[in-house]
Image (cartoon, rainbow, N blue to C red; front, side, top):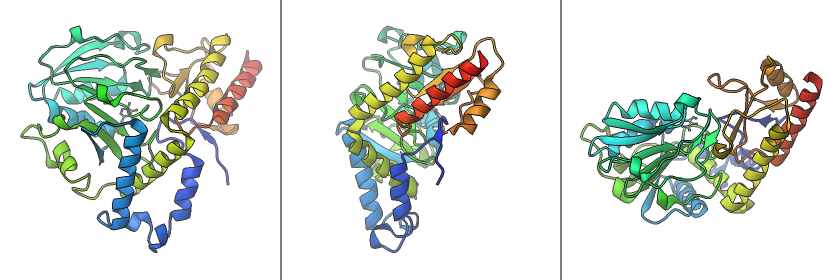
Amino acid sequence: MKRVYNFSAGPSMLPLAVLEKAQKELPDYKNSGMSVMELSHRSGLFTDIITEAESLLRELMNIPDNYKVLFVQGGASQQFAMVPLNLMKNGKAAYVNTGSWSKKAIKEAKKYGQVNVIASSEDDNFTFIPKVNASMIDPEADYVHITTNNTIEGTAFREIPDTGNIPLVADMSSNILSEEIDVSKFGIIYAGAQKNIGPAGLTVVIIREDLIGNASDICPTMLDYQTHSDSGSLYNTPPTYGIYMAKLVFEWIKELGGIEAIQKRNKEKADLLYDYIAQSDFYASPVAEDSRSIMNIPFVIPGRDLDTQFVKEAKEAGLETLKGHRSVGGMRASIYNAMPVEGVEALVSFMKKFEEENK
Ligand code: PLP
């Protein structure tokens, strides 16, 4: 069997232990003679899977009782519409523009109401996270939207802004479960699964109960949080296999010691890479130091046209998908939870060798 270190921004690596467990259980889940893929979403066995997935996520993230956990489809991109359709009672929302995904969320929300961009780093190519405080927010705004980790640009909010009484909505697609957060600071947290949760096709929404039940009249049934909340995410057929895989990933995180332990490991991995880039005069980080992501780490080779060669030779060395996003250029290493420390060590060794050979 061949496995590489996959630095893809998503879909990304899954823990090998999770893949092996899924493989073992694939044709015959718990002596049912059926695969999880073949189980009715209303069967007892699947009810156990979805109940356990929710309870593990609650435990890992310490989700308060007045929050619902929803398993939906449509990706994080569908949340760009669901959020305004459900929350824009006054028809006004505040957005922080920190990258390509924020821009998409803003564009979508503008279809449903007035969007006020209260802070942006667009003029500086999104290389830092702008400061946000309660005084910037219209008191009539229905919510404030942030992207906690900017997958493409490699920035992250190191501090969660205080939005006072206005609910804070966060796209956490690329850093959910990577470090400890206080869920009670948020009105809604949403994330596409394909980075730290499991395979693509599942979207997790964590929503404070008082924000459910206010959807606009034109909101389609499937985009109303109430629909999914009332039915325990079983209004229609949910992405059953994705939920099963998420449950295995949650179990894996718990076995590793929970979010505290995974955060420590993630910090160690990110430090390895940032420290190497900092001491090198060959590579550089395009991101402001106080705004750096520990999940997505872009780096460039200034003044040289070596990106294609770097990516090609890295691939030959078993280091996959290191090409930077076309909007940023250079390279990007996405080092989500499933990336082992050894993967980052292998990348740093390769970077050293490449530097020596091409200096
Ligand atoms: N938001 C962020 C921060 C992302 O990284 C992504 C990309 O994967 C998305 C939103 C879009 O997610 P999806 O493809 O699940 O719609």
